[in-house]
Image (cartoon, rainbow, N blue to C red; front, side, top):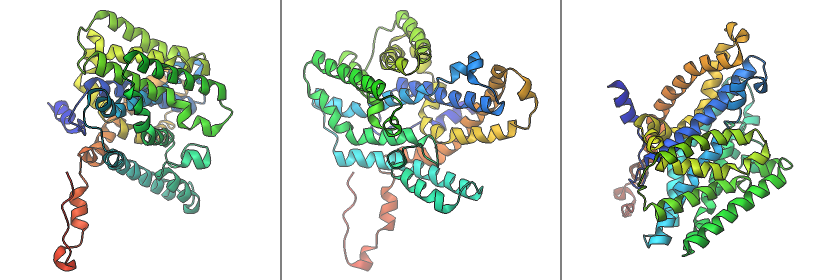
Length: 393
């Protein structure tokens, strides 16, 4: 009963009212991958050991691919209303509303997080205000990657949110691909775009830090989300049918293959979009995999992924500093240390982030949440002699 009440409180609200459980279930896979990546790396640093020498730690060290899995989901979600408009004649989202929604939905939790971490860094004496303030401003306006060519000094995970911001700005134009009437040619164009950006990513490699922190380095993943959106709307009519055990087998193989190919380095990353697409399709089409991704616990945790992503590194860091005083962790095998710390840290992260989600992020999911606040801040017509029209719906 307590768990069901908690799940109800932290269940996300959607802008359109259209809830796709599988997408939030896939967000669960992405956020757990990222959390385990930082957990394994943190435990290796805590015990002064290499992740390469431990099979579990080596596997978790590939968990940063979870960020790319998020990019695919973002491509799907952002493409959805534009694809419906171009393919089926539904109303095209107004750009003003589109950008306003991105701003009012994502910016408040992000700014609250940055300000909180900024204050903690300053109060802890790690850096002076003069040093921190430029990095804060660059991060708030999603320009830290561009200006400094490095991840944010305020919140290291903000680098990917800056890339998401670049994608949001260009997505309405990219969505013009759905104006191509032929399904075959439309998907050929998307597939060629995915391959082209994957090749570009391999060609440039690590030679340019700013390129590594830019949209062109990751565009193939967003375009994979566009391709998934095309399949979802055109082939499945937004309601996949005929679930099968064959797709369950595809699901198991694909999810195992994603970290496996990453052991081949940057070359393996070339294959991730195609493998991830198979895994995502299987989430909709597999009998048991679909049940997993539609399980309330799974999709509810996935629905909190933005808050979890913003805070998990710092919560885990606090636990790591506490675990540093436990001498047994230094003598255990690294895989055992990871399992023990995971049993403590992951539930703690989920519970703490549930509080932040309820208090900060979930209120911003309600469309037009800011209008009563703006209305109260406006001068009274009786005082100014000016009448104000109510805000549009």
